[in-house]
View 1 (cartoon, rainbow, N blue to C red):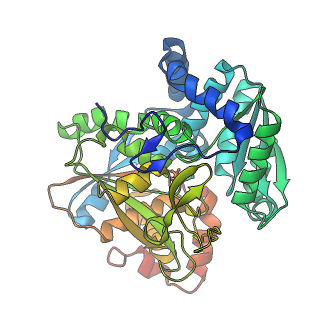
View 2: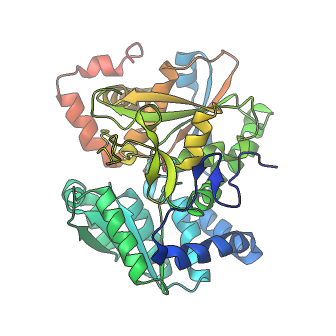
Length: 407
Ligand SMILES: *Cc1c(COP(=O)(O)O)cnc(C)c1O
């Protein structure tokens, strides 16, 4: 009984739907008609579970962070998605979608990527299955994200530069959509978050829901109860958050904290705090909250963390936040960087900058001593080391970052 579930037309309250060019209609319709049957098929389920276990390395641990808990005077558990193969939660979804594509008889995969993380997760599963993979990426992003471009190529994917507009994520998305229109028969489009036209947000949330499914029994082992008091997750499009919330959506006493990137400050003009700055509109095929000018032009978002640098938010999260079910918190670049250093020193874990945003929220919310808090540690920080080090060298004394008193 899931009251916060997508309806027949693909809506969460007033958000969602499928706003697509007419020529995409057959592709999206095929997916909509098949995805639930395929996902519920026992053979599919068996193959999905087996790859999550043996290839991805699931279940990911739920770790009681004792030194962090002591500092914040509460009980903090980390859901370790950073330990997955390829270093983040994104692989849960790409494994699911590649298996689905195979069952739909598709022989070609397309994806778009901004920072390259979703591109790498897609190239990985395509290599695993021996399926052709084309990743669209803005020219500017190709320059900024050279290591991920190299990874995709090594995995056998073709990285196609998107040369139009601002040459970033939204232009890559347009190119991917154009490709799908031209290749409706043999191609599946793997979207990387709980965004896009219905059924993508629901489908991706279901693939990521393994996160909260595991949390239930893991929390029971640790605490004797299946439910935490709070779940904190960062939100770019919202897929790690959707996965971490999924099995608790209808448990009103589990507080859901959605952490967005405030960049240089929510109102600085350099931010990605969509739930605060966003207005209702259509992006990437669904009606949701997005950052746009009064005449509907998308405003380029900014965050130090490439995974949160997205001008919209998945329709599930637009609904959860505007209905009051989830609480939105904004965290700046600097606050996230400090939280990243703090976690490294306190627990010996270097988080992805995206995940570091989630940790910083511990300073901005109220909680009780006896609460059980789960933070979704969506990914590892290897990819962000250069940014962390640049910050260290930017004149902030390493000592102050390392001491327990500073964030
Ligand atoms: C991509 C990414 C995110 C943001 O994506 P969501 O769909 O909002 O989860 C967060 N953390 C990491 C480590 C990522 O790679």
